[in-house]
Image (cartoon, rainbow, N blue to C red; front, side, top):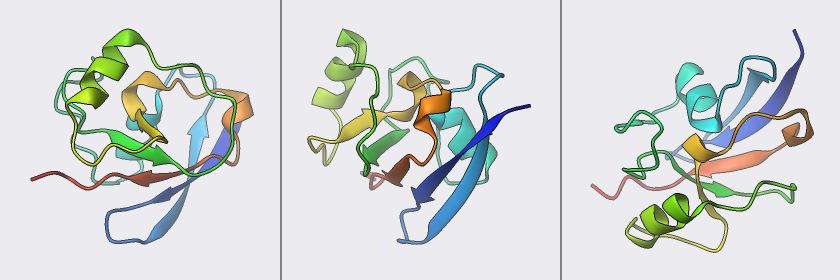
Length: 107
């Protein structure tokens, strides 16, 4: 099974390196949550809640956000130019080395 490494910075500023398989059709939110990071994923990956909001910290060729993702980000807290919803990013081999930071909760 091929996997990639992703660096994730949690809400306390602590870095974690996670391994995510590329052959299981996982998205970034599932990989982060499965690695024990505090990602609520309230809507289950339907781009309806923004609880998997992350900041992309490295230059990677990622798919453009869908209209649903953009609409959800429009109503999310502390959105930046590099904001994405983890549930909308499928784990792909070319994401190896990606670095993300969990966005603040907004609670």
